[in-house]
Image 1: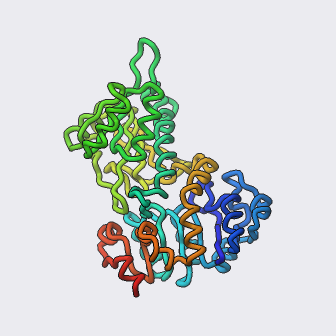
Image 2: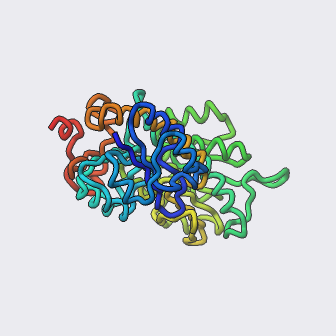
Image 3: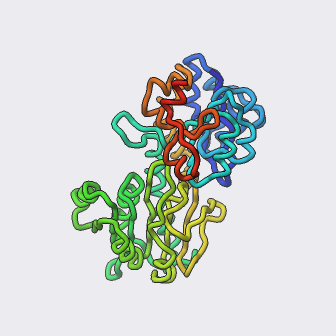
Length: 372
């Protein structure tokens, strides 16, 4: 099989679909890998490293897309990239279609097979290809929030961990999944007062057992979210409904009651954001202010640490990629229910139920379309 890795073109995105080590493993199995010129430079991987691993370097994205059967990316294809997809190609990347009808339309019209990292299910459940970036984003959310609390950025001028005699910042983490766990670990480590909200009592018990009195847990409902948000210096939105748009748990009215200079970091922005006032930003212009609350809503947060993120992502995606290239995408999905769950678009049909619901379009089950 011929595999292509184009340079990411999303604003300030420096990650890359495959590391040289991954290229070497694919190449050793008899497959060809084509890398766009300097695609890995942002993550610290040179053309020479890819050549040594057995890859062929091509000049442009057009050269890559026209040469391959399988496109491996990190972020969802931008409009210029979607125009290059063919109906005999497979795309393997983060897609996040639910809040993005324009992308959905283009992918449907392309006729290509689209497997979304964020929807692949592990053998023990969970979302193994989303998890590594959620880990990175969770940790980065606290770093970004701490930075935004500084006065030069428009924040309250509060040090996250305080100092002896001065109280630390109050942090509300909405959602106790992978993002929430890693955000909590960082915030507790820096000495903040942390409240975690979730709708699973089992999840809250896990936080209580791990952190004891260092973390306050709250069952998530409108009243507890309101109280926690209004009293927080830093709110981290860590909500995930797999495949679907994130619910707006933080309302515009709540912001008006927050202290001026408080910070909202909406990690759920890839799925539309969990705050009513959230809109996607980039690493080049990461923040904006609504009602004196600093919003950090970067849609590709892990892109800030591209080398770590690329390596972590490849650790998770490589086993699935090898199955796809060795068996072919269709047979690989037929034999692996978890990989099949990642199928999002196939022959112009939406095959992920939450995406179909969000876009108000027909849903076709992966079993149905692959059997045909």
